[in-house]
Each structure stands twice: as C-alpha cells, then as structure tokens.
Image (cartoon, rainbow over all chains, first blue to last red):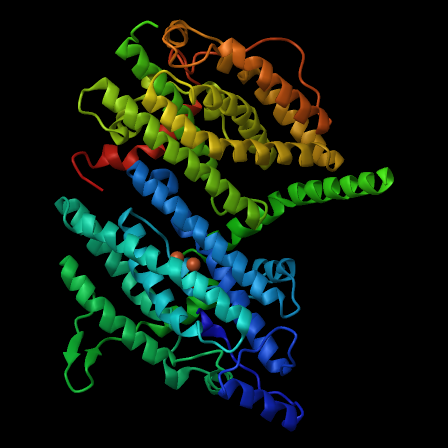
Length: 325
Length: 255
Ligand SMILES: [Fe+2]
Ligand SMILES: [Fe+2]
Ligand SMILES: [Fe+2]
C-alpha cells in the first residue's frame, strides 16, 4: 500500500524482452529477484516497497505514543504486540526491497533526508486513547484494503511479504475495533472520545488510498505490471462501504453530511477528503511531519555508537576466530 | 514447613510484579526509537514478556490479598509508597547502553530467582515461574550479548558501557538483601534464600563483564528502599503519572 506517491516510469527497453516480461505477468507468473526485469519495474518497486517499509517504521510512533499510557495491562500488552508487529512488517518489507539491489541503510538515509516518503496518515497526532481504537479500526483497515490485493502482486518477495503482513493487520483491525466498542459502550466521556477520534481520522484515512483516479499520475503502467492491482477510487469506495456500517454499529456518526447510500451503484456516495491538505501533508506540512522525522533522525543518530560498537565487536570476534585457527 | 503469612506473601508477590511492571514500562519507552530495527523488535518483545509476567504476579497478589482488587487496580491505583520494585528497575533509560546494562543486571538476578521459584512450595508461584523462566533465559542471553558487544566494541561504546556500569552497580545489592518478608518466604519454602542466589548470579555477571572488558566498581555500597517501599527514587512518581493517568482521570470507566 502507500502507493499514493508512486509514479511508474515508462522505460526504454528492448521491446522483445519487454513483451516477454509482460507475457509472464499476464500469465500470472511471479517475477523473482534473479529474473530479468525492466529498469522501471525495479525502480517503481523499490520506491513502493521502500515507502511501505518506511510507513511501518514511522507508523510505530503515533501508537508508541500511547504504550506507556495504556489504561490496563491487557491493553498495554496488545498495543506493544501491535507496534512490535509493525516493526516486523518493516523488516520483511526492507528485506523484500533489498532483493532489488538497494540496502536497508540506503533506504533509511533516504527516509531521513526526505528523499523517500511514508504514508501521510502517520503525520496526524494521536491525542486520546480512543485514537488507538480509531487507528486500528480505520488505518489498519485501510491498509488491509490496500494490501489484500497486493498479495497477488507480480513481484514474488513483495507478494509473500504481503501475505504475512495481511494476517497480522486483520488482527490489528479487530483489536482497534474492540477498543472502539469498549469506548462506545462506556461512559459518556468515553463515547465522546470515540466520536472525536473518528472525526479526526475519517478523512485522513480516506487519503490513504491516494488521490482521485482522475488526478492520479501514471498508474496504468503499474496496473499492467501488477504492482498496483486496483485504482485508488475503487479501493476508497470499498473502504467506505465496509466502514460505514461498522460506525453505525458503534453508534458513531461519520463526519460527512453528504454520506448517503446509492442504490444504483450499490455503494455509498461520500465527500472527498481535502486534497489540498493531503498534498500539504505529503510536502511536509502535516501536523506531525517535523516530529516524526525528527524522532527517526534522533533514533538513527543516537544509535550510531551502538551500531558501530556492535560491528567493531563482531569484527574483533571474527579476527580472533581466524587467529585461533 | 511453616504456614505462610498472607500479608507477607502479598508483599512478596507485589515485589515480583512491580519489578516486571516498572521495568516493562521503562523498556517500552524505547518503542520506535531504538538504534536499529532489530532492537526495536527485541525491546518490544522484552517489554511484552515483562508485562505478561506482571499480569500473572499481580493477578496472584490480588487474589491472595482477597480484597476484590485486580491486577489492574494494583498497577494503576497504588501510589509510590505502595510500590515494591527494586530501585534498579525504576532508573531512567539513559542511552541504549545504560538501558541494556540495567536490563542485564536485572536479568541476571531475575533468572536465578525464577529458577529457584520453579521449585516453590506454593504451586501457583511455581507455575508462574516456570512460564517466566523460559522468557528470562532469553532476556539474559540477549542483554548479556549486548553488554559484551558494546563493552568490547569501539572505545566510545566501551566508555559508555563502563559509565553505565558505574552508575548502576550500586543498585545491584538491593536485590540480594533479605528482610523479614524474604526470610518468611524462605522459611515457608515459597522463595529461595536471597543470599544463595548471589553465587550463581555473580558468576554470570563476572563472566559477562570480563568478556565485555568492563571493570566492576570497587566498594560495596548499595542503595536500598525500593522493595520495602520505604524510599523510592523521584523517578518512580513520574513514571506512575504517565502509566496511571487514564485510570486516574476517568475513574469508573472500563477500557
Ligand atoms: Fe503493518
Ligand atoms: Fe502496512
Ligand atoms: Fe498494523
């Protein structure tokens, strides 16, 4: 997912090889790292998988923000396990990207200096405990919507990473919804907190599918390569159709006065998010962009002596082993 | 074997559970900020184990107390003077080296304690220890390896680890000093004689620190007052302010 900023590249390749490559994809074959692939395919995938990995890593922060304040031991354990899963997703995805000839450290540097992006959603703050519910329910929910089709993506390592990731994401979504249920069945303050969280996370969640198809650049090539499986608007529609009844069940109001069931299309009509806000967030002007990148940079800079120390020790140990032989 | 006093047993169980609760909290503060992704995962995993152990220890403590309190009530509704964790675990994280040194010094004690508790005369205590000991065996292996790697790494990492050891060493002694509660537990066969843990623990700590090329500070001074609750450090109150905030701000809510 988080394919929102990905633009695929048209490439100047040998037309015969390109045709054979396309034929393999059309036949549903998986492309493996050692196989020939067009430079544009490789480049687009590195960007997409890298951004997805970065999103998992930065995504630890808004939820990590509440681990030390979780209201019960059980909730604390669940949230810790969730954030640990997200770090694990980052790891699988970096590994998948590395098979394309880029290292994790290179990708990390690109995240830290702003050359690579991460999902816009993680630039929104988590202000109350209900946000832990809303994030699981809506953000992991939107992530699943994006990622389930990617289990069938043409690049083998990416597809396999998505299969592992999706299993865990659906747990996260259920756990988030469970928090919302507790809040909505709780005191009036808790219910208000839940409504407030939905109000703040609804539109940012819709943004996770990327700009409207009519404004979305170059997705045709990615669709042909099966790097992208559905259009942004298709997935957004599916997400709204799935989520509105869940909000109703909770007794919460989706913050969209225009929201209405449309019998003819068999789905809801709904308001588009504010795309100007979306592009501002992508450009670095979201409410938490500065804090998120600063936190990642600080972790990386403060950790340098640790990485250097462990590396030096490993080298000394190897040298001692050689000397002993 | 003497019948154990339930009030003292409650104290003992709070000591076990508060150690894991407070350390688990501290370790979880790292989430998303570790030096490398693998450490983020490992630290979250350690914190998760410790919180899981807390649920068991404080759950049993609440049961023994018999006043209708739950593990959550004990964790979220007691104030500083009722906490029974050792001072070591409430010390701030500092840099990654300090966090891992604290972890190793605690793990080394924790493992020996749990090993002994698997043979407890109290079946529930023995069962919790049997589950926890497997997790802690892994914790000490990992924290020990990290202390060795960083102690015997670069001159910078060595310097930082020696500093962490110098800072934290005076908090080690408290874990081995027995008081009336410990004596009663030992007498009833619930828990081991703490002094007896010291030999195995010192052997491991000595071996790891030697391989890490770190020098154990001289002098036998030991801070105390955490596990008796007589005098915690100022750090604990701030930790509780954060940990207990929701429960305190919205009394009567269920989460
Ligand atoms: Fe994830
Ligand atoms: Fe994801
Ligand atoms: Fe997730």
